[in-house]
Amino acid sequence: MRKRDVFVAALALVVLWQVTALLVNRPILPTPLVVAQVFVHELGHGLLGHFFASLWRVVASMALAVILAVPVGLAIGQSKVLDRIFSPIIYLLYPIPKVVLVPIILVFLGVGDLAKITIIFLILFFQIVVLVRDQAANLPPQLILSLHSLGAGRRALFRFVYLPASLPAILTALRQSVGMAVALLYVAELFATQKGLGYYIYYNGSTLLNYPAMYAGVVAMSVLGLGLYFTVDWLERWLCPWQFVT
Amino acid sequence: MIRLEAMTFGYPNTPPIFQDFDWQVLRGETWAVLGPSGCGKTTLLYLLSGLRVPIGGQILIDGQQLTRPRPHTGIILQDYGLLPWATVQANAGLGLSVRNFYGLDGKHTPQDYEPNTNVAPWLKRLGLVSVANKFPSQISGGQRQRTAIARTLALQPDILLMDEPFSSLDAVTRQDLQTLTLELCAEQSLTLVIVTHAIEEAVSLGRKILLLSQPPNRQPAIFDNPGAGQANYQHDNSYQLLCQRLRQEMESV
Image 1 (cartoon, chains in turn orange, purple):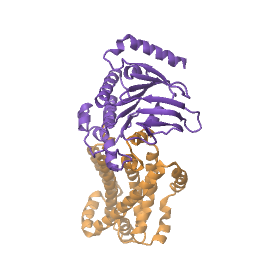
Image 2 (cartoon, chains in turn orange, yellow):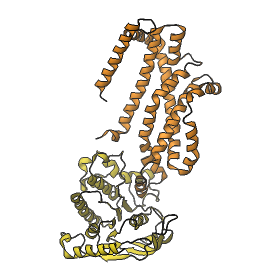
Image 3 (cartoon, one colour):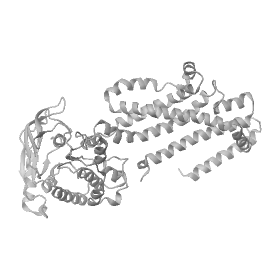
Image 4 (cartoon, chains in turn cyan, green):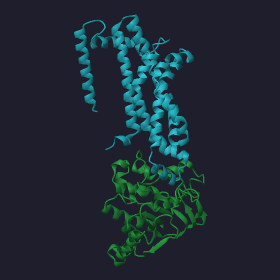
């Protein structure tokens, strides 16, 4: 995908928005120009703080998910016994829509950041465990044997084979989950907080009826999602260069 | 140097592949192990490398019983076993990296090992300098095989085991690498055991040939082949005769 194509697509979406706004001609759909002006103004008046509150929650969830899910995925992926014990449990838990757990988690973990981070973490955790497990389990046996023949024991196998082999799986899991994580962030921030883009969007849209500000929040949330997506993309190019060679 | 004493081996719930099998390889010899599919060639190589352990009898290397991979034995597997995410240089240095990772623990690393990461001389000797920063997916089959050889030789082995190393290469590259392998074995005083299903390859490379048959293998069938490795040996009458004889033996199995 070329940068120019992405830019043209973004421009086309803005034009579509502009045309729709002019046709609808109601306060509920302001034009992109109005939203852009409000966005810039709001940045200096609290939006940035909400943005960083949300960014922190989603990045903390991602970091926590990677730190906890990768060892679990690797362990299950390279041990038949662990796979037999844990895979059925994951099989049952993985498809549960984690969003329905929001009220329960809020009751258990309270109204602070921990509850919100946990909600997003749960989504990412299962996604990463499953992908890393499959990656580790499907490594060619020849690769493992040849490392054994070079004197590698279990520790060296983790360091030189399992960990680098699972990097693309981790990044794929993150990329696949970014959209869902940001969506869940919105839901989580509707409850019991006054910080975060979810709260900002809802408060401006439903309480203040300040639609341009609400849209500025939506734009900020899109920037957050896109930014994370691009970061994962960049990390993949940086950490897994072998996947991009021809 | 390598001695198999009444060795028995079979995979679980299958009949044994080797039964009370005796065989001996002297230091500096070049052996080709030949046989049809399923005769246990690759299994024999895994046993010699310590990746598999006999269920009966024993394998001795320099008088020591072999129970796990031995740091001075180098093995090159059929598909080279290169890490797709590491460059040629990193792959060539992988064995050294593993040793440096463990340090001088005497188990994964030989006692006389001096920490080292320099594979440049091997890259040069094997003609890999120009592709040192490329990934395995970017280089030819012959270059991948050379990388696997560099990785193994960088560990300064005294035994080199190769499993069908040239089977997926074109004829010119194959011949080129066969010659290189014999040169390196002579330069480094290596004991070579090479497994192949190709009669011509076995006769070109092995001064001694071990012919395996349908399991269980009990008695080794050994053929002397003193002309192997000599220039133009392929055009020699004794080469043709041995190929013919081995073909008859394999067909009668």
